[in-house]
Every structure is written in C-alpha cells, then in structure tokens.
Amino acid sequence: MTTVPILEKGGVSPDGNWVTAFSLVTTPNALGGEILAIPLHGGAPKKLCTGSGCGAVWSHDGRFLYVDMTANASGPFAGKSVAIPIPVGKSLPDLPAAGLDANTGEIRLVGARVIEHGPISPGSDPSIYVFAKRDLQRNLFRIPLH
Image (cartoon, rainbow, N blue to C red; front, side, top):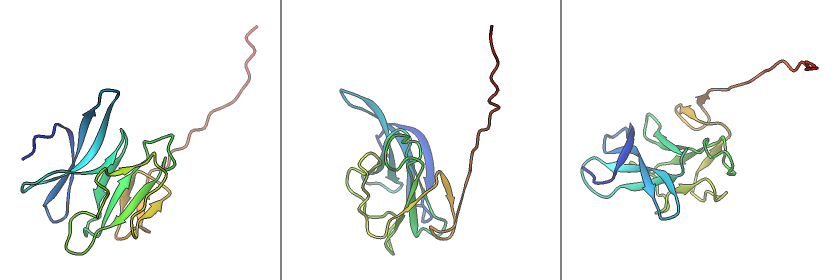
C-alpha cells in the first residue's frame, strides 16, 4: 500500500515484488510526472525516471530494466531507451535517488546500454528487441491559388 497519488499503473517485476506507476508531481513552478517503482510488500517507492514521457519495463527474466526516454523530444536521449542490468538477487538496479533524467545527457550506470530506438519491447538481452518504425510520406505538389 502506498500514499503516493498514482495516475497509471505499469508493469510488475518478474519476481512480483515491485510495480511501476506514473505519478503526478506538482512543484511551485511546474507540473510534471515521474515513474516510480512501488514495493508491493511495504516500503518506500523508488524513483525510476522523471519527465512526462519516460517509462520503464523489466525484461522477462528480470536481468534488465529498460527505461524509455522517447517522449523527451528535446533531450539528448530523445527517441532512445536505456537497458540497465539488475544485480543478481535484486529486483531493481542501483539508480540515483532522483532517478534517471533524460535532460542531463548523461547516464552513469555500470553496464547500462543506450538503445537507439524506443519505445521497445525487450527480448532476452539488450541486443534483441522490437520497435515500431513510423514513416510519413506526402505528395508535394504545388497548386497555384490565383
């Protein structure tokens, strides 16, 4: 149980101990959101990432946490995801207390890999994933409007 206001529930960790959730954050100057990992058996939530477009999902075997940074259209990680290894015996990687922030341009986590696509559906390791590729084509005819 948590007292954190949750707007949307995400995925559950493979071991069933954590759930991700999108929570609204209000500060005196702004309104935003963050993705939290909330322990299902009591304890304090942990911030995974901040921003109105981040997301997180575990690999099926629980060896990686994938953080989607795609909705941050202006940051250095726009359109990308990050695969973070999870230490053996844990459900979450060791993240900074403030979580990941796509606006900083740096992710200093041992073993983390940047994936050039996002959002992704992960496979058995960070080199195997699927993503949707979108393309837009238009006819560019000049029509005089005399």
